[in-house]
Image 1: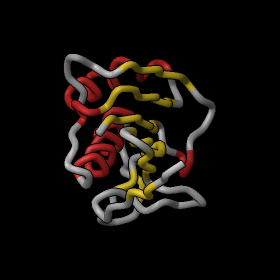
Image 2: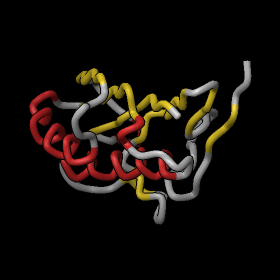
Image 3: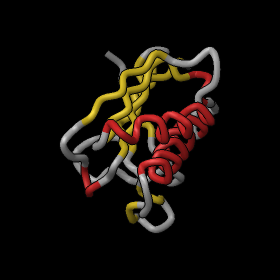
Length: 126
């Protein structure tokens, strides 16, 4: 299997033993993006909507490094720490992912890395 590591300084560097994204064949698997501002390396403060904006910006930065947009995304998984924020996160999400929207799962989790309220992972086609 052919694997290519994808990395850009326009998105946060990996904070563990993983890659920002891996390309294999015509698919790119993006690691979950938490709301870290790549310029500061710090978690964006604010509510789930504010954090969702940064998550989406990080996803977009990785895609753009490959000449892609969110239109290339076929599947996302959104992790939130409070299901009550679903509506607010969804409002942000639809500003970045428009019709035809990718398939998506959204799940509430007990905690996310660095105390984030939102994390978004994606799969895109080339």
